[in-house]
Amino acid sequence: MALFDLRLQDIHNQLTSKELSVNELVDESYKRIAQTDESIKAFLTLNEDGARAAAAELDKLLQEDGERGLLFGLPAGIKDNIVTEGLLTTCASQFLSNYDPIYDAAVVKKLKAAQSITIGKLNMDEFAMGGSNENSSFFPTRNPWNTDYVPGGSSGGSAASVAAGQVYFSLGSDTGGSIRQPAAYCGIVGLKPTYGLVSRFGLVAFASSLDQIGPLTKNVEDSAYVLQAIAGYDPMDSTSANVEIPDYLSSLTGDVKGLRIGVPKEYLGQGIDPKVKESVLAALKQFESLGATWEEVSLPHTEYAVATYYLLASSEASSNLARFDGVRYGVRTDNPDNLIDLYRKSRSQGFGDEVKRRIMLGTYALSSGYYDAYYLKAQKVRTLIKQDFDNVFENYDLIIGPTAPTTAFRIGEQVGDPLTMYLNDICTIPVSLAGVPAISVPCGFADGMPVGLQIIGKAFDERTVLRAAHAFEQHTDHHKQRPQL
Ligand SMILES: NC(=O)C[C@H](N)C(=O)O
Image (spheres, rainbow, N blue to C red):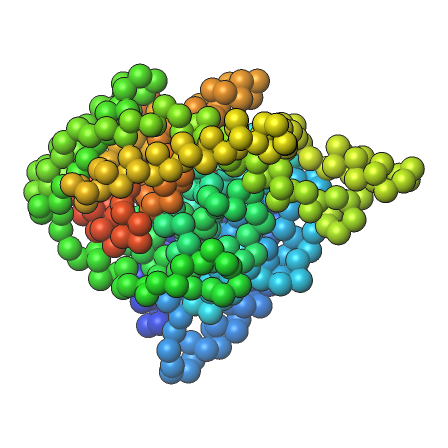
């Protein structure tokens, strides 16, 4: 079995029993990157010297007795909107192409405390705006299952690097689907935790009322390990929830007998590829055979979710991205005439088209005279969408449906059509607006491309989400399929 096919726990055991060294593991990772990244293009920056130095330190520790971190020695990739001290953090934007952070994000500190190794920084849509990685201002990442296809986005590099076996896990961020949709397109597991469970201190903000960091992994157990390492209260993030962190690993041993599943009719209706629907229905059958029950339910405000999201997320983005002015961060224009010219030129040159589109949309929605009609109304609709979920969760433990309405599409197919691109998130956006957790797990293939199943839980009930996802995975082998590279 190739190293990258092992579970995090197996690797951990081999390391602690000294069958394997951290250096060998890190070597494997860079070898795999050398073999595959010319075609996949998942990485923006490699941390080879840093990773090798960290590996040497950990190998020294292996000679001594003592506690090992939960992710000891495991090579990880980090989305390039999560700041890493001394390692470029560009958000895949020309604007930040020279940004070398002076601190680590809270999650990066947690990964270091858990003793994992940062292999490098992963490509994404610029400032996390997009669903295909084609909005990276450097180059698009490609789907390991077929390099003519997009890996999804915005955490496309994070998903592709795990699917290609370059790293053992990665971190992504999800605002309206950016972890789950690329995980689905690349045939891996992606978890968006409850809003507030994982600190966003050091995540370059896109839409602060929605952004969450989460793990992308090859299987559900690994997802639970990474979540265990990164979850927890952080006073440096004012939206961080001060809740007790349960033992996610022990939730994996449970079964799904008696679990009540609601299946939203809106997620399997118009616009859903019949082959995706078929895979989702087969997965529901699987749940039934494991002792769960499912019924059709309704999330009646689903049809307003995409419009609501694009008003709220863009409004927040227009405000968050105001800090990029050419003075404090990143690239500054040459020879401006005056201060206003410096702002204008730096922003015009620094941001790509999609980012500009959203800043303009958000600025418009927030402007006086339009605020009530757009921003405020969208806030009210968001409450209705959240209530849809509350209502269903009164009678059901989980909500299950597809992660995305289709499988991955061809590179270039949707670039000229932002609306079609936005609609790819129709099943993930409502979940983000409601702030509840959801995982995407592989549930089949359609024309050779992976299909993702989305399992949605109650706020802070990641345990039930992981338990159901794990039980499903134990009885299927979709997650064991590997792309030919
Ligand atoms: N950022 C996300 O979560 C993805 C979404 N497609 C967006 O462009 O906003």
